[in-house]
Length: 74
Length: 273
Image (spheres, chains in turn blue, orange):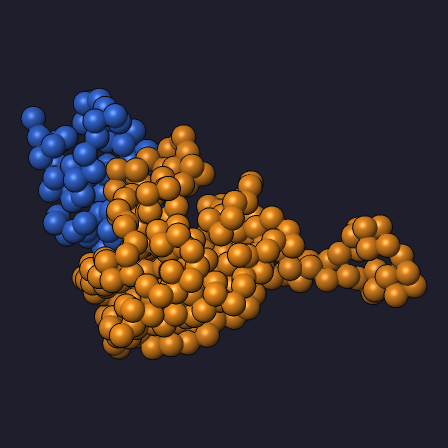
């Protein structure tokens, strides 16, 4: 999770504050159309799980909470 | 019937002109119901501002520049030089023809810390450099009315929800069948990484008639314009959304549905009563 948080901070240095776990990362544009794929690749590396782009559900990426549950929990 | 001095550039006859006028009355009524104040946007948009808004990255194919002749070009033309030969003397003015009405409205809010949400509506001439033109469906120059909301995240969503209901009521009243679908613009949604999120979580939905013409759209911008133009609301980058109507396309839809411009006009007049 730390690596993901670092990535978000690099993307948005202006708001160098902690991101609430339930904040909508897509509506707030912390994840946007330009960096989405980069984020998916990072998530694959960090989680060790592959993400199938054809069956992707955007809601799985909406919050840190969802990302943790879906990708980072053992 | 419209006449076309050039493809994509119609001149409308009296009945079509009356249709456009009555349609815009209806759109303004929707704007007023959504709480929007009528304003007028600028005729051209500065290149620097469009750059800041990723316009050239997202819509390079639509861009139409405004240019003027250099001093030498002006002198040569006045001396009778053919305009074709003088085209090398065209110089950019640093301005572009708008492809949508809301850009100009956003520029009026740059650097503003809003204490209340802003709701604005304007109609403007818009221009698009398309690969082909077709009747009143696909034009190089046309009129677009927009109803813009700038404020909170929840407000931006509520604005579009209300807008969709009002558009459905209008189309029912004037006898035009529509469906609301996620935008499928081939450039916007082409292959590659950039359109992936747009496909998974569409920000643009279009009102389509049965021949596939998009006569209007609802667009959520999230906090993009707020961030890029430093428009703040409640201490954060403002959220925004807009409802857009393509006037000539609505006229196309009405005439298609009612058979003739006269019948379309009658339907609009009946809906006004």
